[in-house]
Image (cartoon, rainbow, N blue to C red; front, top):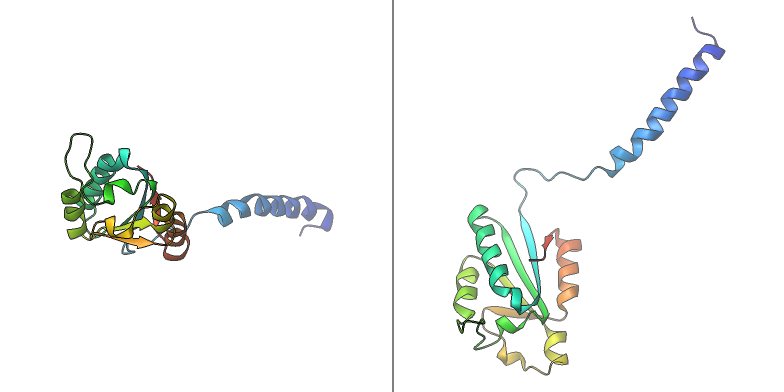
Length: 152
């Protein structure tokens, strides 16, 4: 049988080991279950990236057909969701947006941007909806609805 003097170093070592491991265990990220819904918000604030972003979204859907994707735009990123918008080669964006919309992608345009740039809401294509604030929408989707964030 051990006396207190022999037991003290063992207890000290156990206490140190527990204190050292606790933060690691507490900081470990939660792992979603295999059947959890995959939800992703794509953030676009520059329409120069719109074609690459739409390609990313399409590839994402091809790889994960059940994914729920929301594309949130603000600042110069709204331009590809305006009527008659074309890429640098003169190709309209709307057919690409329509194809992705048909696959369940939601497109959202920042009203603050429309107001600050004096763009009438009627200029936004039918495939997109208007939200009060693009950045607030991204924050809400992440914090309240569990969306992962991607910035192409």
